[in-house]
Image 1 (cartoon, rainbow, N blue to C red):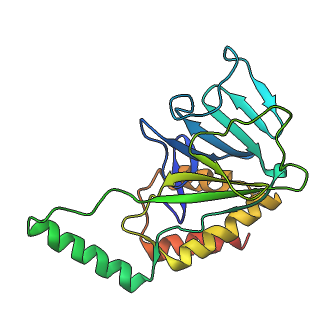
Image 2 (image 1 turned 180 degrees about the horizontal axis):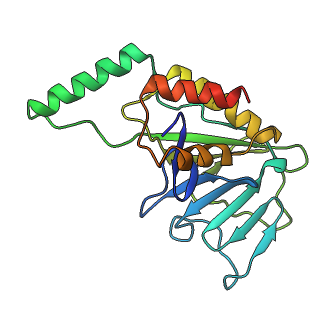
Length: 208
C-alpha cells in the first residue's frame, strides 16, 4: 500500500481490492475498472457474456471500464487521514486496548471514490438507467463508489494530498498506473512501506 493505492499481482487499486462481496476500483493504462460481484451487488447485467457498450461504460461480465479520456477528475473526499502524530497515537491506543482485552480496532473504513465525467460524457444513452455496483448518482456528470480503505487506522494527510496529485496526472494522461505496478515488481513485491517511505515514493512519482 502506497498512499490511496494498493498494489499487488492483480494490478493497482484505489483503496483495497474487492473481497468476496463488494466492488474494487482497479487503475489501468486505459482507465478505471470497477471489479467485483456486480450482478449480486446490483450492478449492470451483461447479455450472455458478450461485451456491450453503453455510452462511456464498457461492460464485460464483472467489470465496468471508464476510460481516462472520459473522466475529468477522480477524488476521494472522505479518505481517512490523520497527521503522523495522531496516526501513531491512535495505533498505540488500539494496541493497548487489544492487549487489555477490550477488542481490537474495527475493520477497514469505507471511503468514497468520486468520479467526475468529462464534458459530453455526463449523459447515459437513451433508455439507460442502471448504475454500477456501489455507485450513486448525484450532480450531473458525477458518480460515487464506496470502497474499503487500505490504511489502518488512517492515511497520513500528506500521502492523501500526493495521491490526489498522482490521480490528476493519470486523468491528464501524463502518467500511467503501470508506474506503481512496475515499482512493486522491481522492489520484489514488498509489503507496505512506512509512512515516510510512502510519502517519498509518491513525491518521486509526482515529480516525473
